[in-house]
Image (cartoon, rainbow, N blue to C red; front, side, top):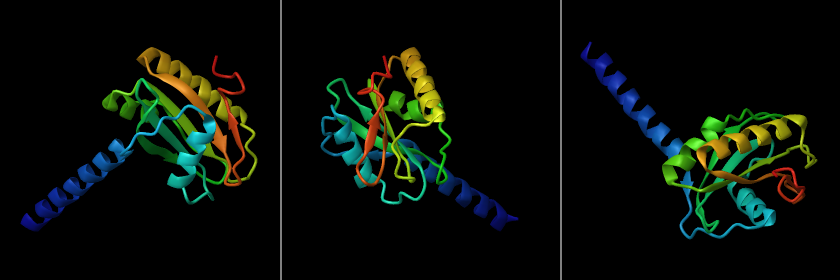
Length: 157
């Protein structure tokens, strides 16, 4: 009985530690300014090495668009990734971020956004407006370096 309680407590500690690491994401030491989609893609390509699955990533920014932190919000399949505004904006609120850039890769090599990509972008923009955290851009990128920027295409207005 005592062993079971010890195992349960140990398991709970491991779980809390894992959630804390996942929630905080990966901090950035120098906080580069990110003003163009190319800069965001460069950051994402360095962070995400396995491009066989979709990775949805958020970069949290301060008022000067310096990166405060980045986090992989979701890892999906070769053709889809589940994303909810709650998981994108929860760290933003905790960090005191005023803006966020989201990115995800297309393992297919085609940077063209899907209807679901457009729907997620709309939901994130609306959620950010409620929270006072602007969605600066949603960038779809490929390992080859091609990308599609919703902001550059005028789709975030």
